[in-house]
Image: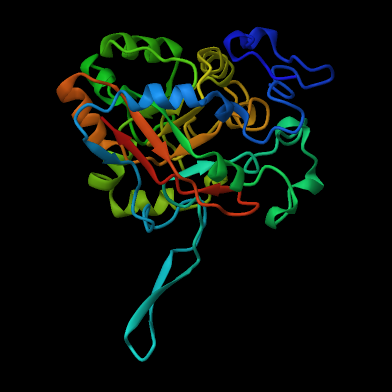
Length: 325
């Protein structure tokens, strides 16, 4: 039976399926669902988003594939080789050490397994395999296609205006109160099926101000304690808030949406959003020009499109995202 999208349950009333984990959306969009909250992007939602295009201004939200440099979390650098074909008449590309989640990215539902409850919608470990024989692969995002209303939450400008700018070398958390105050100052609201895009200013700092030593430290083992960056938190508070907004997905310009490192007291939103709620997470999105334009014209809503790579069984993908105003 199809769910009534006009009557989605609040976070406190989850789950809706007998035997599903606490505060999970398993079964809400069907027992075989592989799209999660992307189901909230309906044809009507896309039509409404298209009406936001007034100027025709286009803002690509994607980093170069070789940034951050060095790659974070121990990944190897991308190697690009230009190959001559047909006696030098044609050229082709060869990419080696291409990590689809090394630069601007979507985290798909294969990316994180809840340590107790497993993958989204009860998907079994043995169903998360290479190729298209398993479930929850990035090909489902690609076949869906993403075109909806986007809302920028420019936390960098808001917090600086409040006299409390974020320290990009800290694990400072931004909570619900700051998000709501920022949205109020921007005179914009989040609606069901939107993609919420958070600008912390982290990527602007990384590209323009971070020293070589800081970049090297960020390229190290995140679990070793050398990596720190600000983000959203604490987990329980923000996750419930995002669900009750019924966002289709969330994205940010920092490496992980959450403040890093997580702690037992503050939790980690990845364990909630991806495997329990089916809410995709975008990371390392390039927002500098978009944020400047929104600040200039006072319009923080736009049409947002994304065409993830059609990787059978893919864990994540570059977003290939555009904001159009």
